[in-house]
Length: 488
Image 1 (cartoon, one colour):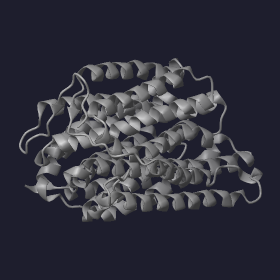
Image 2 (cartoon, helix red, strand yellow):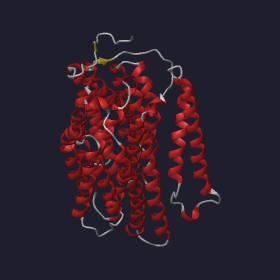
Image 3 (cartoon, one colour):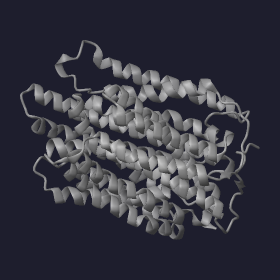
Image 4 (cartoon, helix red, strand yellow):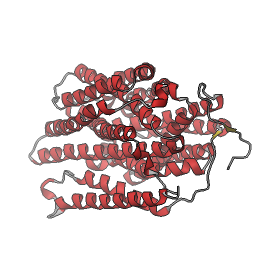
C-alpha cells in the first residue's frame, strides 16, 4: 500500500454513515469540479467572440471545445488505472496542477495554436478530476443515500453553469476574452492550495503496470472518430478538393478499427487484472443501458450547447451578455432541483425521473429546430428551462443507477468508462452539429446571403439532428432499474 508522507488514509464508510474524512475529500473535489465546469461554461459563450478576435472560421474555433472534450476522452480511460495505482492526494494534486497550468497558458496565448495547447492541458486535469469525484462518491456514500448525495453534488455543480455563461458575456463585452482565464486562474490556484493542505487519501493502492499500447490505441481510436466527424460537412463548399468528401469517412473507419483493437487489448489484459480500462463493467445490463442513455444525451446536449451560443449571437443577433442571460434561469433551476431529484430517486427509483426527463430533453431540442432570427428571447429562455429540468431529472438516476450496479472493486473502471463515453459522445455531438451549421453557413455566404440569414437553416437542421438523436433515451429510460443494494 502506498501513502503520502504526512497524510492519513481514511477508511471506506460503514453501511449506514458517511465517513467525515471522506466527506471532506468530496467537498474538496467539488471545489475543483466547480472550477473546471465554470471554465467550460464560460468557453461555450466565448467561441463566437474568439472566432472573430482570432480571425478563424466556426469549424476551426469549435476545436477549442472539441479538443477539450477529446483530450478528456483520451485521459479518462487511464483513470481507472490511476485511481488504483496512486493515492487520492497524488491524483488530485496532479489534476488541479495541470488545470492551473493550462489556464495560465491560455491567459498568455498570443494566438489560436497556443490557446488550443492550453485547452488541451486544461482538459488533461479535468479528465482526471471527474472520475475521481464519482469514484470517491461511490466509495464514501452508503448505497441508500447515493441519490440524495448526488442531488447535493448536482446543486453545487450547477452553480458553475448558472454563473459561467452570464459571467462570460459580461467579461467579453467589457474586458475581453483573456479575462475569462484571468478570473478562473486564481480560483484554481486557491483550490490547489486548499487541496495541498487538506486532501486525505482514501482506500488502498496497487502496483499494476500501465499499458502504454492501450493508451496509444485509445488515443487513435477516439481521436480518429471525433476528428472524422468534425470534417463531415466541414463547410468548404465548392472549394473542397476532389475526393475530400470521402476522407472523413476513412478517418472514422480508421478510428473504429483502433477502437476494436483497444477493446481486444483490454479483454486480454483484464484476465490478469492489468487492463487500462476493465471492460467487465459491461457485464452489468443496468450499467450498459445507463451508459448508452448517458452517451446519447451527452451527444445531443453538448452539441446543442455548443451550437446554441452561435445561434443566439449570429442568427438571433444577441450580444454575448444577453446570450449568457438566456442560459442563466435554466442553470439555476437545474441546481435548485438537484437535492429534490436525489430524494425522489432514493424514494421512487430511476424511472420516475428518467422517463419524463428524457422526454423534456427531446421536446426542447425539437422546439429549438423551429426557432429563427425573430424568435422572442423569452421563448428561448422557457425552452432552455425545460431542457435544464429534463437534464436535472436524468443525470442523478443515471449516475446513481449505473455505478451502483457494479462491484466495489470496479467503481473506478466504471466511472472511467462512463465518463469516457460521455466525453467522446459530447465531442462527436459538438463536431457533428457545428459541421452541419457551418456547411449551411458557408453555402449561404457563397450565395451572397449575410451570416444571420445563411446561418438560420443550418441551426435548424443541426437542432433537428440533435432532437432525433435524443429520442433514443426516451425508449431506453423504461429499462433502467434501481440496484438491489440501493433498494435495501
